[in-house]
Image 1: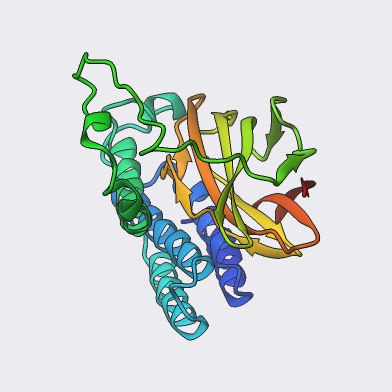
Image 2: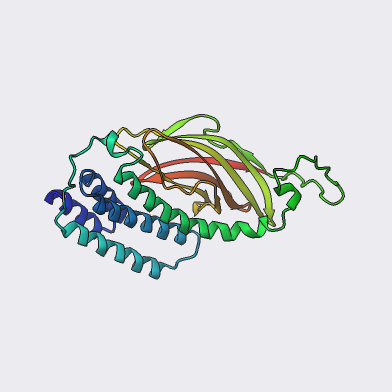
Length: 278
């Protein structure tokens, strides 16, 4: 790694800007060995997991600081190591991201590790809801039409609370290197004083440099950030020029006075307000 890049990354670590240091190191390692890129991607996945656990209330501040310190030490060690150039001729960015290239394999491995960790948490939250489902409804091969017994399965009443002025609904917009389209946004009753906000979206990687790392999406209720309780797509990145869909569910307290949706990445923020009509 070039000395000045290493110094910049170490300065960011000293300022507790660990994610920026990792991004800087990854950008400078595009033509380095696959092993070094793999190590950096795993560190970035570990850092993202720590942040998700904090927001979900599964990790206290002291333990989070200890785990971040371990990541910082590992990154400093990598910065001090002399990089080993890859044995093969340097490939163009397009060739490096081909389906069979080592770079993509290691990126997929890092994403898989993060996805398994996040999936375990969200699976425990949703399994209790799916466990009581009617087996007949779960069997797609059944051609026999189902007749709903209205007495046994009464229709769920609509939520008395309605979503109002949700931003950019149905209108594509760009933030960082990803184009977002919020397809649908709706609310459902969840518990006393709480509702589910269900947000369906499409994402498109618009970067000309390579993969796009996904931003964090948070709902702010009275300026307090709320992480998604459920996510359909756990991937932390999108391949070059690819598209993907996602559905995220947030549990909101209806007693809050203000609501915002916020996307953040690399100290940049996109923030818009919306309302709940009672």
